[in-house]
Image 1 (spheres, rainbow, N blue to C red):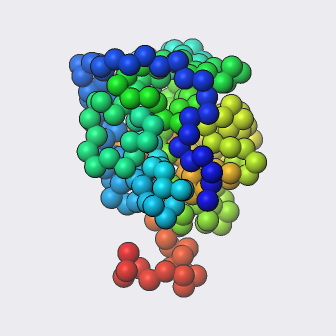
Image 2: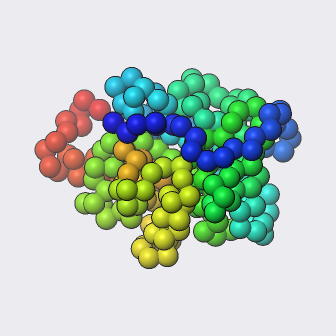
Length: 229
């Protein structure tokens, strides 16, 4: 098991205040819909047998114009340790306004503190203005089949939620097929899978497509009885 799962490792400058439904309500609803699908497929949640009982998985979407500068591409993200909640509302989200890898700092506001993976989400949004959604899932089957599926994978020694992970994600984008295959496995973050895309729907479909391919491999290897799933 990975120690300190779900622990925020960056310096959080967070202001607690309500989120305006007129500004973020529509975006929140799209995220909640796909987060529900992820919960039903076990990609987010809480399992006492996994990760020392910590909740896992988070979702986010960009806010504002594509033209925002690096480190200032604000996004709506689920709050830390909310993944096991049956029903989400605006009180379970935060808006990340700014993120600074060099200073390991995230500035945010909202009823909840932002996910411990906010730094990684910010790094992905900095890859290009076309990226408008990031989904972070935990999938044992997809994670262990990452090599067979040739998924870009971060170095095992790089911990989640850190500047090192942010830089590692950007390295993968420059050096691998990540732009054409918008999914990566987190080598040092057990079962961690990240997908991204231009819309929430597109991003969710990428996740489900690769999950199905992982199950196909398991089936072909005789390691899974599909009738029991």
